[in-house]
Image 1 (cartoon, helix red, strand yellow):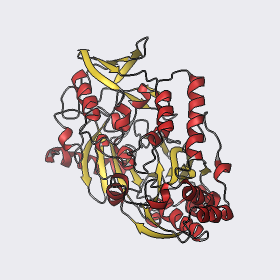
Image 2 (spheres, helix red, strand yellow; image 1 turned 90 degrees about the horizontal axis):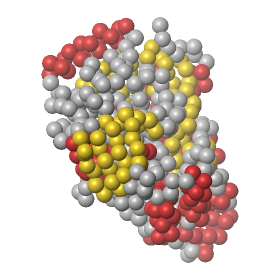
Image 3 (cartoon, helix red, strand yellow; image 1 turned 180 degrees about the vertical axis):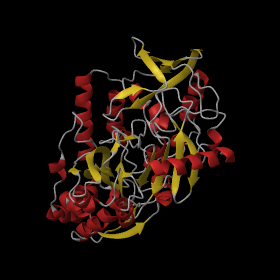
Length: 489
């Protein structure tokens, strides 16, 4: 539990610095995280609070998407590609004062890959055969097969390093090694953090930060206009961005994300097991209407699960172009006319607004939908974990995650042995040209199988006080990294 004296002192400091405005910041977030342990939850909102702020991994993503040193200052790989050696930074401590060393890395990786692990991205650790420590500042990870992507995998929020002394409370009182320490979580309102004066790296400019949860777009707009919130890195009311652009108090920050926004289909749910039905749904969708109506023009159409800014991207939107007459023909061939499907929508506006538009488009080809608006925790339990749904809309913001289609137990339950073999080949391939070819083949395969309705790449549309510097423009991972954020004089 958080020490009361520490909490009181931190809040006193926040009250003082808030008046100055030079080393305190309040960030708006649409979704409240269900917990604060990134190693035991799938919600992007967890990483939006804790990634690079409270928790750190062996490696980390930079704002440009590059893989950079984290708790490991350097690493090397053996000639056969089976053993990675990580050199840890000396003098690193967790927020509770305990030392971070090789034993904590072993604990974290073994915990993540354990059979009973609840890590949402266990596939990141599937190749690990053994983790050993020649000395307290050296970790050797032996893999079962070469994996040129392993340093990339270790940069995910799901791979942060935790300690056995504090992991049991990580969901509500996280203890990491990062530049900020957890102060409090006022459920339904905010999470606050304070600068870690014992941090091993460069001290952040900010002394305190508050992540304020505002799910309603109108309330988000009002909070920014009243300057109750200093920045909203993923602003939910895109229809109001022009008003902020015209106001010299604010900067509008538009970038790209890793968020493939899809109409997910349960590939094992009744008629959706038939590729003709999935293809009919894909051709019933008018992507541009969804982008215009739900996102006010912000978003890039996609035809497979791959980011358009990636050099290996293939534009496959034409393969599932808007063709309602073809949809009707395919439904008739499949004997699926008069179909009714359950459409489960999580809270984000892209899902709620987009869901209404898609429901109308499906109705036009003879598919009725029963819409259920779920809170995030409900969506995780019923859809993501329980697989009790027909259709849902969600942005997959994890970086370069086409490999999820090789997991037959994943929530949309796509099971294709050829695709699984393709991803297995990709995972052991290090040659850039060969990897590029395999990435393109993977995009084509899931487009051919109409696994999901591929909608658009989520744009990162943020609003910030014009005096704030250092917020990420793009989102190579789901994070509000505060390490480089500061105020101008």
